[in-house]
Length: 332
Ligand code: 8YV
Image (cartoon, rainbow, N blue to C red; front, side, top):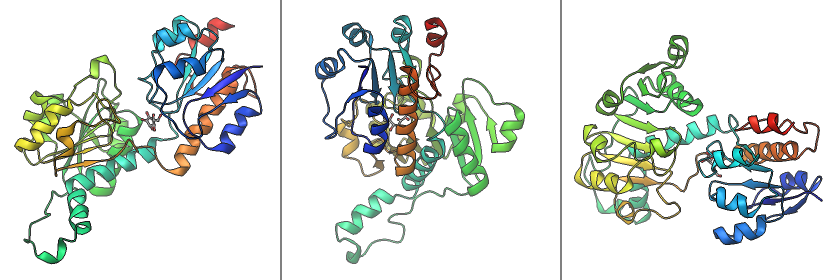
């Protein structure tokens, strides 16, 4: 019988849809598996419902030659070596669209929390410090409304954030991306294209929403941070590794920029120790898409992809969101 692996805990009723078609091994206690354990569990299976926490690379595929489909829970798939999958005829799928607005909400929330110093304020209240007096500007942060919002990366999530800033908060929205949007789209979302240096220099609040790849590694390092305003905030909801976290910690300490909001980290779940010691950084554990509705939609789309990719269900052979659809054509 066809068998599949679910690498992380998921919604039982959604996993049941896989059980209706396949033999399923899952991970209900959400244990973090080592690469070796993942290899052992995947061996002999035809498909995997994987997450950003697992590296799916050539060595793993070679050790598990029966695998035909890697269905990743997430729009980003930098944890999967797509070229290695394609070369071996393995289909890769992701979960675009279903998480766009939810992730844009978190980006905006984290940017606001960073600008208005919610992390520091909350810790102050919890520590019972409020009654001890304080100065008028103690938690005075930076305005969000009317400020200049900079967006680096202008895909679906970037556009959803731009709309929030321009239409909801009266912000001037500038962006930089590999390709410029067409004029009509720019007008609809209220965003203006600038070069990267201008973006860094002019943004009051800079949000990173670009995908991670070898070419976007350390897109923001010491040099880029130096171009930013000392009053500016930086929010990263994209991927760890896009920011040089050590350089960011140094810049936050030196006052090169005012504050940072980080949902993703280099080498997460580990966090650079220098970041943990800073007051002017708001830290969240990669929760961009974390609402019940959206996480269910992501899991469900992944299950649709896996069922179809392995030739079962009403859409057999036609998974809804393939990353390397050429594999499907060559397989026919
Ligand atoms: C996921 C994400 O939670 O979609 C993405 O790319 O980073 C998140 O929404 C993560 O990928 C879990 O696998």
